Amino acid sequence: MLSPSRIKARAHELGFDLCGIARAAHYPELDYFTEWLRRGHAGTMTYLHRSARRRVDIRQALDSVRSVIVNGTVYHSPHPVSTDIRDRRRALIARYAWGDDYHAVIGQRLEALLAWMREEAEEPFDALPYVDTGPVQERVFAQHAGLGWIGKNSCLINPDLGSWLFLGEILCTLDLDADAPGFDRCGSCTLCLDWCPTGAIVEPWRLDATRCLSYLTIEYKRAMPEAYRAAAGAHVFGCDVCQDVCPWNAAPAVSADPAWQPRAGLDLPDLVDLWRLSDADLRALVDGSAMTRVTLEMLRRNLAVAIGNSGDRTAIAELDRPRADAPSVQSALVQEHVAWAKAREIS
Ligand code: SF4
Ligand code: SF4
Image (cartoon, rainbow, N blue to C red; front, side, top):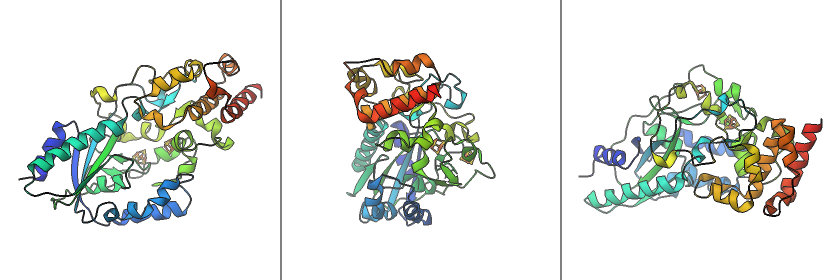
């Protein structure tokens, strides 16, 4: 008999730290997404508009879906948080990207859980596993599956483990008993709003992606708007500030999983060391991590801005050193940001 308790036990065996079940209902929070899109907060992420109907109505993804099994995996490793780094030559890379690409790792574990469920179930059922990229508002279902609550920074926070969590879910046509939903524990705290370098959390629970460094350094393919370049500081891929300052992450759970430990060269590398890499070596450095989401030109764009922000003349001088093995440096996109970085030093 395929019971929720057996599914959860198997999920834990497969490396998931949290597993809960939500009904595939139309929760009111799902409709907020439409309003968020209407306000223009998605910026150039047009795929969100294209998949909006499916994101609001989970049945568009899987007809006759009845349950959503949501799994959470802690990825925090015992290394300093970005708000404690004072050396402005250290490149800040979002913690989730330090290890192996979570899409692949979590995807394999979900497939393994689903394969086991199919073996154990008395009758065939339809199911779809998703990791982040699917048209599912996973944090809403995570909250309704009892994994935690959606904080004012829009992250899913578990009261025992914190918010350094990868989420992955299985939509299925099985009628499974649901867990009690999580409830808001942010209270009167506003630390994430107060600390956000770009003011992207425009009000509690409303994150304007077009101002967010995660969007500007990863999703946004064009020139970084000048208004946000200084605020980007040393962030070259994503941003963890609104999680770093969250009190629920003061003593977060730590993962010993080798998949999430920092790869050599991705935990606080020197900005200039990264810049000096050939294109082949830079690509090799990020291969297999979530950082492959950006092109080399975008990564160098971000590096040029961060080097400009370092205020370090030696570092800024490196931007002009000719490199035959790094043609991405010569792209118009990168060169415009190099010029900005050099002008920043002169002024
Ligand atoms: S990720 Fe960074 S820029 Fe984006 S909302 Fe959080 S603190 Fe602000
Ligand atoms: S920093 Fe405070 S307001 Fe923001 S998510 Fe954490 S508890 Fe909630």
